[in-house]
Image (cartoon, rainbow, N blue to C red; front, side, top):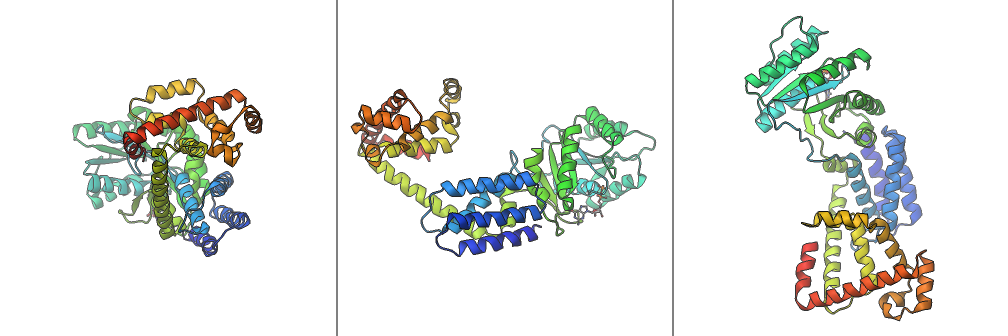
Length: 445
Ligand code: GDP
């Protein structure tokens, strides 16, 4: 499915993982090659550029984990970024079909694989999800298209709406919905007419059908082999009629795969399924994690780094806990905590995760205590010397002035930070004595 891109990338990373210590230049060279590989796979330029930039930033700031090589770590970062680029919201492949009969509008250009995909989806919903599905072709221009769907329906054992000559697309769509209602169907799949190119008449007709049946999902079927063109088609359909997701077909071919990588970033719409063959069961759920793994072809390394990171984090947390219990909580610890908070989406993000704290998160936002503040606090700690971080009580006026100036802050800001540190240190000590710490740490993990 992504053979070419996959081959290119594994070549780059093979060279990288074999080296023990990586220099910044090694990573830069590798990422330049990654960028070329992405562009050759027909990933759009801004997406490729952002991708490489994100990996570069993450790789630069990252502490090297014990027991894996820096090269392996870079592979993991690239994997995560691939996943991120591919990811939509919610469950992969999930469709909003809870309210029967749920109309699903299938749209796309002629020849994209729309009718085939309609059949595949009907089969999947019937067999895998136990839904009762009714299919209807709205292609009033090509009687052959209606027959094609009817034949498919018979093959896979899914009902199709009886053909009535002379009806408009809107009339057929409405009849299908009524029929589905009366017949107790869960889902009604509407296969709209396609054109070789996007034209006004086609769009208007689809819009009319959309308004008449209020689909729960509007799925755009596009040919994955057409690379960036597929993404442009998606943008256009989304702009005109609004789509809820994309099905990329012909991903079984030796296409360059770029459409899959650009789609979400450019259109903001998730790929829900991929078509991987002409047979009726050749429809796969688009799972970002698995696809990222397939593109990179380095699952073993990714798993290895994940495991190493877990162990390290657990070890660090354990060590920190023991120190806190002894009442040792210096500025380095505070910095670690602030960085952790930043990673978890700032104060707001953290609070919104805690039950009952949602409202407070809004207050925090109002008070201006956001990521910016966390970053400023981290900057102040970074301006301290090693000695000052270990023993903040030695900070008198001149040192404070230096630190404030060094981080572009006021002494009053620094005083606030120091007060917060003292309060936290006190709390840690108390919690340590009462055995609360263990519980609190456990809750945080
Ligand atoms: P429509 O005009 O958009 O309805 O396109 P069709 O559903 O009639 O499909 C056009 C051709 O593409 C048919 O020969 C299908 O078998 C083929 N096709 C559809 N999806 C796939 C796919 O995922 N992989 C491959 N290899 N062929 C496909």
